[in-house]
Image (cartoon, rainbow over all chains, first blue to last red; front, side):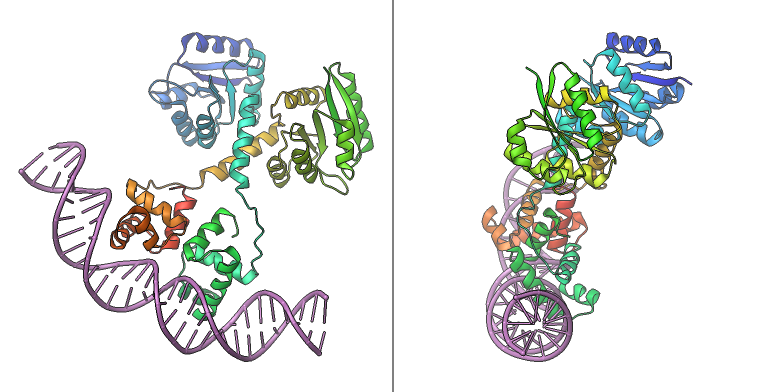
Length: 212
Length: 212
DNA sequence: TTGAGAATCACCAATTCAGGTGATTGTCGC
DNA sequence: GCGACAATCACCTGAATTGGTGATTCTCAA
């Protein structure tokens, strides 16, 4: 059974060459080529694709908005983004919207075919420059800066967790079955270890350094 | 000029076949093959590679620890991780440690050569299953849940930023050149919009939903 | 066994915060 | 111009928080 591929691309020439490329493959068939995503839903229902090739910059509904809609209405459809620029924000937005792959338009035809296949198989083909950017973004997001090791006791960690949830001393005391004065003492110790002097500072530090 | 590749891999058979594979390429040369990372620094100095193929599971010093050291001591060396399992935590750790690529060991030889080349060119080759996982992790990290749109005024956002930094009303008042009572009023409005009732809840929400 | 730390509780003073009421100014769109 | 709203300020009360001092119990390692 051939893979059904649909194309959303406003550049007529590029769109037509993609259609031709897809149809030149034995086990692929292009079931729709559209210049914009303004009639997205009916277009999708009619074309009923397995894989969508989506240009990120289109007049009217943007490629990213289209991805959001497609992933909502047709969650089984895989989406391969295409763009001329490997722009950080766009990549970020497309990934979060649910795109599976991200290829530059200048990718050679054979690689593009491979990417469509890989997308259909549940992979995540990415142009090298995009893959690098994704890893960079990932690192900068993930690592934060947990420079200093903060050695809270189990009890202190538990109380800090409750403070982060916005609980007052009284509420913490009730939750832990201890008195307010005890909570106050623990909090004091937490402040000393975190080098802070208020609940909100402690909460901010706890979240940013993933202490809880 | 041939690409200098070094291999760290405890399985003798696999190590030797990798060496052979690398040396069978015209523009690659294997400058060192080691069964573990226990004498990492001298090994690296002696082999002086452009690209390191690093097994993630090795006796003694783990592949990930080795990546950290290499990236610190030899920042220009690119590292291609190799593993039998596409384990979330390992991938995560390797990326954060600074690995450029991540390939399963069962990758066919030709693809492995391509991956080495791509790594050397500053790319980030990833086995399909790994790429998918990276995108998934990225999504779950990035998106958080910024469901409801919170429309803070510029002034409110500024004050919230200061609260997140741990400032008291008095300090905020001083920073913004306004009175404490005005700060108090702004804070009240912020609480209403955020549906919270304390400074720490507001701070937590602000950070988690990236309002500041 | 002796000491360090974790967890618990208490009392206290000064400060800060939350929320209620009320008011003035300036800007923006209709 | 008028209404809506942001930004500003004031006064007030009760509650919560911060930080100081001091104490008991228990456990775990030196």
